[in-house]
Length: 128
Ligand code: THU
View (cartoon, rainbow, N blue to C red):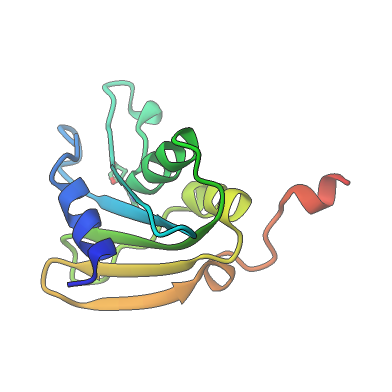
């Protein structure tokens, strides 16, 4: 299996989801080949929950990574789980037109461009 998908699966094993019981793993690949995993981390004040995708990208940025090529996202759903709107926006800002690989525990997978998942995105170019 692709090492990026393996890293996402491994990260899913650390998901902290005592409220939804919906376990998500993500792994982001930097341009230099390094991989950073993330899982969802829920909070008793529900709105403070952090998705797996943002955990992964924030971790990567915190560790000094700057350019990114792909993110993989895994959940146990027959219909592949896509990043939520907040994660799409954060990924666009920090990564640009990333490749997004969705997969599930049954082995189904599908790949998208972030620009297809978030058309006409708002970003820093509007602030110039
Ligand atoms: N979640 C993610 O981590 N990523 C997604 O792509 C969709 C949703 C999490 C947030 C929350 O912990 C749980 O899944 C249910 O929404």
